[in-house]
Amino acid sequence: MQEISLPWTIWLTDWRFEPVPIAAAIFAVAFYYLAARRLGQRNPHHRLTVGQQAAFWGAVGLTLFTILSPLDTIGELYSFTVHMVQHLLMIIPIPILLLLGVPEWLAAPLFRLRPVDWVMRVLTQPIIATVLFNLVFMGWHIPRLYELSLTNYTAHELEHLMFLTTALFSWWPIMGPRYQLRTPFLKIAYVFVQKLPPTILGAILVFAEAPLYATYANQTARLWGWTPLLDQQIGGVVMWIPAGIVYLIILSVVFFRWIGNEEAEGMEQQGTFA
Image 1 (cartoon, one colour):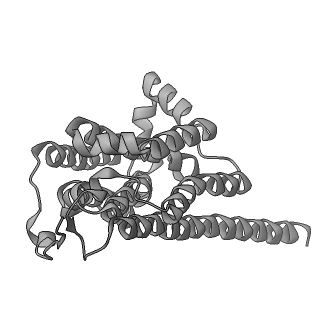
Image 2: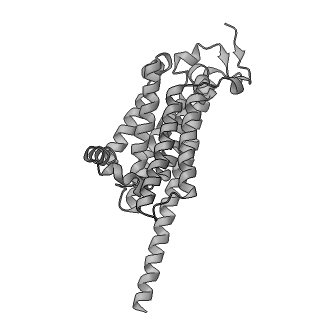
Protein backbone atom coordinates (compact mmCIF):
# COMPACT_ATOMS: atom_id res chain seq x y z
CA MET A 1 0.00 0.00 0.00
CA GLN A 2 1.67 3.17 -1.23
CA GLU A 3 1.47 6.20 1.03
CA ILE A 4 1.35 9.79 -0.21
CA SER A 5 1.67 13.16 1.51
CA LEU A 6 -1.20 15.62 1.34
CA PRO A 7 -0.45 18.71 -0.77
CA TRP A 8 -0.11 21.90 1.25
CA THR A 9 -2.68 23.56 -1.02
CA ILE A 10 -5.44 21.67 0.79
CA TRP A 11 -5.15 24.31 3.53
CA LEU A 12 -6.10 26.96 0.97
CA THR A 13 -8.71 25.21 -1.13
CA ASP A 14 -10.71 22.95 1.16
CA TRP A 15 -13.00 25.58 2.69
CA ARG A 16 -16.72 24.79 2.79
CA PHE A 17 -19.87 26.86 2.54
CA GLU A 18 -22.58 25.48 4.83
CA PRO A 19 -25.76 27.59 5.09
CA VAL A 20 -26.89 26.36 8.51
CA PRO A 21 -23.87 27.38 10.65
CA ILE A 22 -23.47 30.62 8.69
CA ALA A 23 -27.15 31.49 9.18
CA ALA A 24 -26.88 30.59 12.87
CA ALA A 25 -23.86 32.88 13.24
CA ILE A 26 -25.68 35.77 11.54
CA PHE A 27 -28.69 35.25 13.79
CA ALA A 28 -26.50 35.14 16.91
CA VAL A 29 -24.73 38.39 15.99
CA ALA A 30 -28.01 40.13 15.12
CA PHE A 31 -29.66 38.97 18.35
CA TYR A 32 -26.61 40.04 20.37
CA TYR A 33 -26.63 43.61 19.10
CA LEU A 34 -30.40 44.05 18.96
CA ALA A 35 -30.76 42.84 22.55
CA ALA A 36 -27.88 45.06 23.68
CA ARG A 37 -29.40 48.07 21.92
CA ARG A 38 -32.84 47.52 23.42
CA LEU A 39 -31.51 47.05 26.95
CA GLY A 40 -29.20 50.03 26.48
CA GLN A 41 -32.19 52.22 25.68
CA ARG A 42 -33.73 51.25 29.01
CA ASN A 43 -30.56 51.79 31.02
CA PRO A 44 -27.78 54.08 29.71
CA HIS A 45 -25.23 52.22 31.86
CA HIS A 46 -25.82 49.06 29.84
CA ARG A 47 -23.26 49.33 27.08
CA LEU A 48 -21.16 46.65 25.48
CA THR A 49 -17.46 47.30 25.94
CA VAL A 50 -14.95 46.90 23.14
CA GLY A 51 -13.49 43.90 24.96
CA GLN A 52 -16.88 42.19 25.28
CA GLN A 53 -17.65 42.70 21.61
CA ALA A 54 -14.21 41.43 20.60
CA ALA A 55 -14.69 38.32 22.75
CA PHE A 56 -18.12 37.63 21.25
CA TRP A 57 -16.87 38.08 17.69
CA GLY A 58 -13.91 35.85 18.54
CA ALA A 59 -16.27 33.09 19.71
CA VAL A 60 -18.42 33.35 16.57
CA GLY A 61 -15.41 33.53 14.26
CA LEU A 62 -13.62 30.60 15.86
CA THR A 63 -16.78 28.50 15.74
CA LEU A 64 -17.16 29.10 12.02
CA PHE A 65 -13.44 28.47 11.52
CA THR A 66 -13.55 25.08 13.24
CA ILE A 67 -16.58 24.00 11.20
CA LEU A 68 -15.93 25.46 7.75
CA SER A 69 -12.13 25.53 7.47
CA PRO A 70 -9.87 22.68 6.29
CA LEU A 71 -9.49 21.73 9.97
CA ASP A 72 -12.75 19.81 9.71
CA THR A 73 -12.06 17.88 6.52
CA ILE A 74 -8.39 17.16 7.23
CA GLY A 75 -9.14 16.18 10.81
CA GLU A 76 -12.02 13.97 9.79
CA LEU A 77 -10.26 12.14 6.96
CA TYR A 78 -6.50 12.41 7.29
CA SER A 79 -5.03 13.62 10.57
CA PHE A 80 -5.84 12.84 14.17
CA THR A 81 -3.66 15.76 15.31
CA VAL A 82 -5.68 18.27 13.29
CA HIS A 83 -8.87 16.78 14.71
CA MET A 84 -7.53 17.29 18.23
CA VAL A 85 -6.75 20.92 17.44
CA GLN A 86 -10.35 21.32 16.33
CA HIS A 87 -11.67 19.70 19.51
CA LEU A 88 -9.37 21.83 21.65
CA LEU A 89 -10.75 25.01 20.07
CA MET A 90 -14.27 23.83 20.80
CA ILE A 91 -13.76 23.07 24.47
CA ILE A 92 -11.51 25.94 25.58
CA PRO A 93 -11.31 29.25 23.67
CA ILE A 94 -14.79 29.28 22.10
CA PRO A 95 -16.84 28.88 25.32
CA ILE A 96 -14.47 31.15 27.26
CA LEU A 97 -14.76 33.92 24.67
CA LEU A 98 -18.53 33.54 24.54
CA LEU A 99 -18.87 33.90 28.31
CA LEU A 100 -16.52 36.88 28.35
CA GLY A 101 -18.55 38.50 25.59
CA VAL A 102 -21.94 38.30 27.31
CA PRO A 103 -22.29 40.61 30.35
CA GLU A 104 -24.73 39.82 33.15
CA TRP A 105 -27.21 42.53 32.17
CA LEU A 106 -27.43 41.14 28.63
CA ALA A 107 -28.16 37.60 29.85
CA ALA A 108 -30.57 38.71 32.61
CA PRO A 109 -33.77 38.72 30.47
CA LEU A 110 -33.22 35.07 29.55
CA PHE A 111 -32.96 34.12 33.20
CA ARG A 112 -36.33 35.71 33.88
CA LEU A 113 -37.80 32.81 31.93
CA ARG A 114 -38.25 30.13 34.58
CA PRO A 115 -37.47 27.13 32.35
CA VAL A 116 -34.22 28.74 31.18
CA ASP A 117 -33.26 29.73 34.71
CA TRP A 118 -33.98 26.25 36.05
CA VAL A 119 -32.08 24.46 33.28
CA MET A 120 -29.02 26.68 33.60
CA ARG A 121 -29.08 26.55 37.39
CA VAL A 122 -29.04 22.74 37.26
CA LEU A 123 -26.64 22.14 34.36
CA THR A 124 -24.06 24.66 35.58
CA GLN A 125 -23.81 23.22 39.07
CA PRO A 126 -20.12 22.31 39.39
CA ILE A 127 -20.58 18.58 39.92
CA ILE A 128 -23.16 18.20 37.17
CA ALA A 129 -21.20 20.37 34.73
CA THR A 130 -18.02 18.40 35.43
CA VAL A 131 -19.67 15.00 35.00
CA LEU A 132 -21.46 16.05 31.81
CA PHE A 133 -18.34 17.46 30.21
CA ASN A 134 -16.15 14.52 31.20
CA LEU A 135 -18.64 11.93 29.96
CA VAL A 136 -19.11 13.72 26.64
CA PHE A 137 -15.46 14.54 26.05
CA MET A 138 -13.99 11.20 27.04
CA GLY A 139 -16.91 9.20 25.63
CA TRP A 140 -16.61 10.58 22.10
CA HIS A 141 -12.94 9.61 22.06
CA ILE A 142 -13.71 5.94 22.69
CA PRO A 143 -12.63 4.33 19.39
CA ARG A 144 -16.07 2.99 18.44
CA LEU A 145 -17.85 6.31 19.03
CA TYR A 146 -14.98 8.24 17.49
CA GLU A 147 -15.15 6.15 14.32
CA LEU A 148 -18.92 6.65 14.24
CA SER A 149 -18.43 10.42 14.28
CA LEU A 150 -16.04 10.12 11.32
CA THR A 151 -18.36 8.01 9.18
CA ASN A 152 -21.80 9.40 10.10
CA TYR A 153 -22.57 13.06 9.38
CA THR A 154 -25.31 13.33 12.01
CA ALA A 155 -23.09 11.79 14.67
CA HIS A 156 -20.27 14.13 13.66
CA GLU A 157 -22.44 17.24 14.05
CA LEU A 158 -23.92 15.91 17.30
CA GLU A 159 -20.42 15.37 18.68
CA HIS A 160 -19.45 18.98 17.94
CA LEU A 161 -22.69 20.33 19.40
CA MET A 162 -22.20 18.31 22.59
CA PHE A 163 -18.59 19.48 22.90
CA LEU A 164 -19.60 23.13 22.59
CA THR A 165 -22.57 22.99 24.96
CA THR A 166 -21.02 20.89 27.72
CA ALA A 167 -17.80 22.91 27.55
CA LEU A 168 -19.90 26.05 27.98
CA PHE A 169 -21.52 24.52 31.06
CA SER A 170 -18.12 23.47 32.41
CA TRP A 171 -16.66 27.00 32.19
CA TRP A 172 -19.79 28.65 33.53
CA PRO A 173 -19.01 28.23 37.27
CA ILE A 174 -15.77 30.15 36.68
CA MET A 175 -16.86 33.04 34.48
CA GLY A 176 -20.58 32.75 33.70
CA PRO A 177 -22.84 35.80 34.04
CA ARG A 178 -24.68 34.04 36.88
CA TYR A 179 -24.26 31.11 39.25
CA GLN A 180 -20.49 31.36 39.56
CA LEU A 181 -18.69 29.60 42.38
CA ARG A 182 -18.62 31.94 45.34
CA THR A 183 -15.03 31.72 46.51
CA PRO A 184 -11.70 31.80 44.62
CA PHE A 185 -10.60 28.64 46.43
CA LEU A 186 -13.55 26.71 45.00
CA LYS A 187 -12.82 28.11 41.54
CA ILE A 188 -9.19 26.98 41.77
CA ALA A 189 -10.22 23.49 42.87
CA TYR A 190 -12.81 23.33 40.11
CA VAL A 191 -10.39 24.36 37.35
CA PHE A 192 -7.88 21.79 38.62
CA VAL A 193 -10.50 19.04 38.31
CA GLN A 194 -11.53 20.25 34.85
CA LYS A 195 -7.90 20.06 33.76
CA LEU A 196 -7.79 16.29 34.27
CA PRO A 197 -9.77 14.94 31.25
CA PRO A 198 -7.59 16.51 28.52
CA THR A 199 -4.49 15.50 30.49
CA ILE A 200 -5.63 11.90 30.89
CA LEU A 201 -6.70 11.60 27.26
CA GLY A 202 -3.45 13.17 26.08
CA ALA A 203 -1.39 10.73 28.14
CA ILE A 204 -3.33 7.73 26.80
CA LEU A 205 -2.75 8.86 23.23
CA VAL A 206 0.93 9.68 23.72
CA PHE A 207 1.82 6.37 25.35
CA ALA A 208 -0.37 4.09 23.20
CA GLU A 209 1.78 1.53 21.41
CA ALA A 210 -0.47 1.26 18.35
CA PRO A 211 -2.96 3.46 16.49
CA LEU A 212 -6.35 3.43 18.21
CA TYR A 213 -8.46 4.69 15.32
CA ALA A 214 -8.85 2.61 12.16
CA THR A 215 -9.70 5.52 9.86
CA TYR A 216 -6.27 7.06 10.28
CA ALA A 217 -4.42 3.75 10.42
CA ASN A 218 -5.88 2.71 7.04
CA GLN A 219 -5.50 6.09 5.34
CA THR A 220 -2.81 6.15 2.65
CA ALA A 221 -2.70 9.96 2.37
CA ARG A 222 -0.56 11.36 5.20
CA LEU A 223 -0.30 14.85 6.57
CA TRP A 224 3.38 15.87 6.35
CA GLY A 225 4.27 12.21 5.90
CA TRP A 226 3.50 11.31 9.52
CA THR A 227 2.81 7.67 10.37
CA PRO A 228 -0.57 6.97 12.03
CA LEU A 229 1.11 6.32 15.39
CA LEU A 230 3.19 9.51 15.25
CA ASP A 231 0.11 11.49 14.23
CA GLN A 232 -1.78 10.05 17.19
CA GLN A 233 1.05 10.81 19.61
CA ILE A 234 1.37 14.41 18.42
CA GLY A 235 -2.39 14.75 18.78
CA GLY A 236 -2.03 13.54 22.35
CA VAL A 237 0.65 16.15 23.01
CA VAL A 238 -1.65 18.83 21.57
CA MET A 239 -4.43 17.77 23.92
CA TRP A 240 -2.07 17.41 26.88
CA ILE A 241 0.35 20.37 26.80
CA PRO A 242 -1.51 23.35 25.27
CA ALA A 243 -4.68 22.52 27.19
CA GLY A 244 -2.66 22.25 30.39
CA ILE A 245 -1.04 25.63 29.75
CA VAL A 246 -4.43 27.31 29.27
CA TYR A 247 -5.79 25.78 32.47
CA LEU A 248 -2.63 26.86 34.30
CA ILE A 249 -3.08 30.43 33.06
CA ILE A 250 -6.68 30.48 34.27
CA LEU A 251 -5.65 29.05 37.63
CA SER A 252 -3.02 31.77 37.93
CA VAL A 253 -5.50 34.53 37.06
CA VAL A 254 -7.99 33.31 39.68
CA PHE A 255 -5.24 32.91 42.28
CA PHE A 256 -3.66 36.33 41.79
CA ARG A 257 -7.06 38.03 41.74
CA TRP A 258 -7.77 36.29 45.03
CA ILE A 259 -4.49 37.50 46.52
CA GLY A 260 -5.09 41.01 45.19
CA ASN A 261 -8.56 41.16 46.71
CA GLU A 262 -7.25 39.88 50.05
CA GLU A 263 -4.54 42.56 50.09
CA ALA A 264 -7.06 45.27 49.18
CA GLU A 265 -9.41 44.18 51.95
CA GLY A 266 -6.50 44.14 54.41
CA MET A 267 -5.53 47.69 53.48
CA GLU A 268 -9.13 48.84 53.87
CA GLN A 269 -9.30 47.31 57.33
CA GLN A 270 -6.04 48.99 58.31
CA GLY A 271 -7.43 52.31 57.11
CA THR A 272 -10.59 51.77 59.13
CA PHE A 273 -8.71 51.14 62.38
CA ALA A 274 -6.04 53.80 61.80
